[in-house]
Amino acid sequence: MNSLTQEIAATAARMVVEDGLEYGMAKRRAVKQMGLPARTALPGNDAVEDEVRDYIELFCADTQAAELAALRQLAAVWMARLVEFRPHLSGAVWRGTATGLSDIYLQLFCDDPKSAEIRLIDHQVRYEASTVQGFHGETVDALSMVCSCPGLSQRTLVHLMIYDHDDLRGALKLDGRGRSLRGDLAALKRLIEEIK
Image 1 (tube, rainbow, N blue to C red):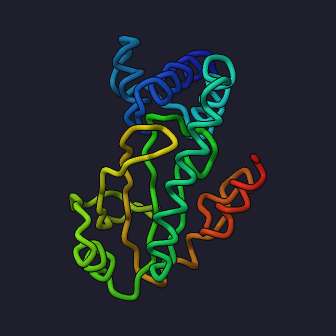
Image 2 (cartoon, rainbow, N blue to C red):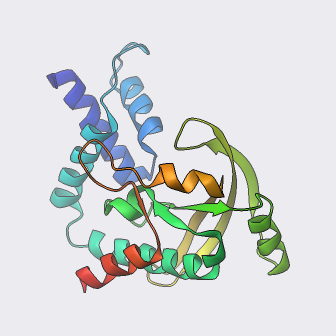
Image 3 (cartoon, one colour):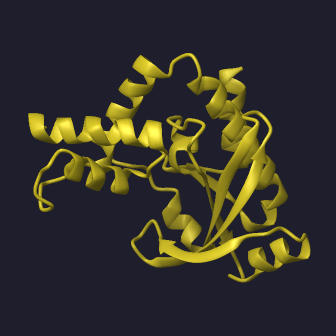
């Protein structure tokens, strides 16, 4: 990786940690903040994640572990509530790079795409519906909720991405570094226990 790409990754990483931005948005803002042309080659997500880990180690080592633990506990609560939809945790909370500003991303694999939404309505849970890009680049429905996170004494966004049941097979592939991109409730509980 050349020095400019590394500088973009480092600047984006700071925005991810300090502002709670997602990688794509952080990379684009980093390019703009650095006064570079919009068509500047962007670093890959792995490079940004490496920089995020370095930034956390340098500047957030005293708070990040507790924030991550609180977010994982909240994710586990929602995964248990939605267990019939085969929830899988993804994103920074799964990967271990989340801070108190991070959102929780749960991917649900449903037989009926409307069933998760009906479940929220039945339990009088307020949510916002939208569409987002899925893990294969396709458009998927997303249900976003603002939830209390007791371990952080603040509110946290929880996003439920609705996938078809058959998408679960492709979801379990590993990334280029041999790591799982998501995990089910049992895998999350193992992560929680490892940190105790």
